[in-house]
Length: 343
Image (cartoon, rainbow, N blue to C red; front, side):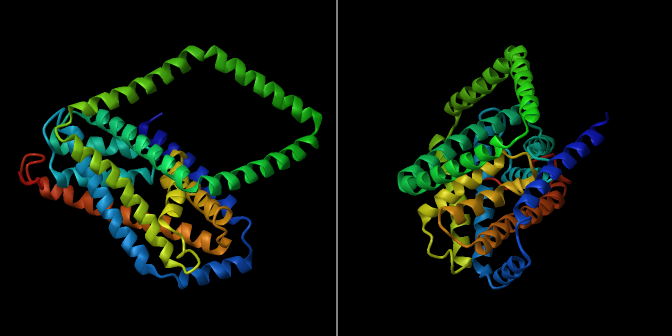
């Protein structure tokens, strides 16, 4: 199978999953609900959405600055322009095929800066480690600030879901239960036969995680690196928080409330769908409606506006990057015409 066909099939698969999630979200919306949603969208204060997009630009720029810090110990320090454009092209690619953007930005920067592709992939692994740690930090902060509120709602919802599922299971045809049992037994047997491969895979992940942590010790500016890492997520937080002011119903929500929404929304990054479509909206809507009792109309509209605004931002910056990258490098050796830090 050719790489083109393989990537096309992946795209269709991931897109299909995303479309399925979106369908689950919109399938229960009535005609009256759609009228209310259109009215809410038309009357939203888009100044705050635009401000969120501006903050997003700075968060992407900081990610490029941090990536340069990781690259410097393994090779030469790349130009900021080439690094930023590579990051944005990677983000743009992720909206087509999830996770492919990480490889794409490494390939783009390797081409224009003549830096080892394998080395760049290693720095991306380190980035993922740091982002995971930072996300965990925000999760801890969320628990400290909003534990009772979050725990209470999650417990009620989990109990309700379990009871509903149990009532459904009791009325399932015994033949179906036997088939499910056989499938589960076959699955357990398959996992047992593949245990060595699975353990090896898990071991590799853990080794990459620990190796990423150790490599940070080689940074020339560790304080600046950690500052950038924290600042990126603080900007993510404010990108979300300022959007609350675009609707009167959510304008009372606090920064600690935004942390709760951010933490839950971040889990959409693990969904194998382009740009987290469907998963992001479902998580944001669920948090706003079930934890903060925001109406379904406002929650739905806000979730989609936030997601679409960031998509627009990535598309604009990604296309600009595709145009400018070859232009700023055409008359010089790759990477020579770049924006450098002041010495």
